[in-house]
Length: 570
Image (cartoon, rainbow, N blue to C red; front, side, top):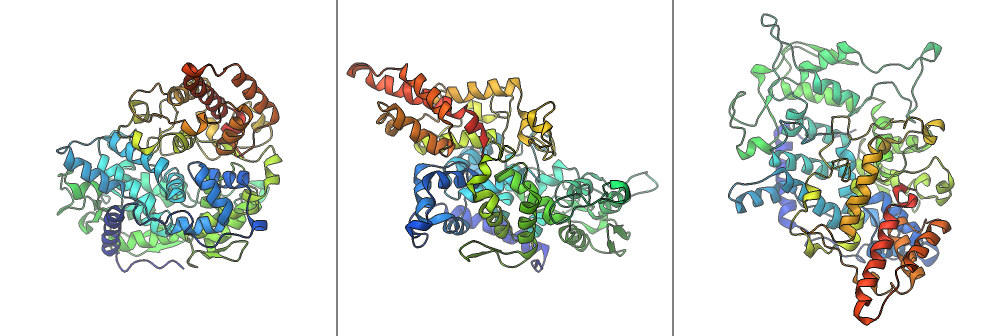
């Protein structure tokens, strides 16, 4: 059973205090590789390709240092170490930048903060987990009311980070009280019904908190498969009456100011402090939805508590959430058994790894148990699944770029965000940017089926294919070629010093890039094509040797990141 903090006010204070503490400690307290426990016995160690495959699922992409760490200490110790690593606060960085810039701050500054941590953060599992959660609980600067509020955006990014290793019930609550979500789903200053004026509560959040954040549209068994009524008809989880009743719950929330209509929106605490309840604008009627009843004259915070408890404890929530998180990390089409095992970890709040190490507190919804269950499950770790043509997922564009940059762009080069990363969601760029999806349904639906495709014919979903088309494919190649070939001109300059040292040995160069970029999964024909192309770039005399070595490395990387083995994560 999830144990809530004593009061919403205490939880809000704790959230802000934690953000400040994380900012204060920065990365100086993070453990160095090698301090995570005892090395595994040689017979128990994953090989480098297995370690790289694990890191592809658990981070923004493997680097050689991380591959070596995982291959020595194993998956479980790496996960446990990551759970102990703090993250820096986006909000605190934005506030500091605002002061340094005399009050000037932009959404792009928050994007820069995201890219910096995705690429260089040593809390990689937290960063990847937060990105996954942000695609379930979407807010977006494509929304006119969110755009231009970088502190509000940064505070929401912090919620994803701070709660990524917390409890899903706690995450539901922090999202509900977030000013970013209040703005995005239009329940900020949502008022109780007024029959004389024909006013009814806004229903946006009531609908989406059920449909997208917790129980989904149809009833599920514990493996995520739809339950069927007579005649094989799926059973809807809620109806319009449930939406109407639940909408009453989310009335009376406004900025954290002195009164409900306080419009000093640019005050710092208004932009990022959790929303405040104003009883005079909250519906005092009784509320009946799903299997819950809230008596009349129940306070705002108590009504929200009952509503979120109801959704959190619904039997759909564990399989519904678990399946989508598996899709974001490991494979688009997990078997029902895989979903069931992860949902069981969600329900139990604990997961025991193959070595006997336990992850999680034992409280239902502990996400530490969920992430461990996802990443350590046999369907994630058994390499024989790679041979299944229905296994794996299209690698997300954001992850592709971050992975390249993690390996080849020194942090010292990134003092300025390149213009192409300010809005990478453009279809002629990456086609995706964190916190900039086109709608509350994310960049792609979890059940998206690509029309007329082989995967559709096989009955498979392919979410990321929803943003894959002629423009995005060509745009991605052009986007990556500019960065790889150092043609961006305003930061993120690559450093290929190490790779150039082995550029004369084409087989060694391709093998190295195969390991760090495609987990050693390149097919022989792919490697042969790349090696043949590199042989057409001869290394000249001493006067041109450095240039030719650089050209070989760049060509090898561009062919690698556009290869099928890279674009499809297995």
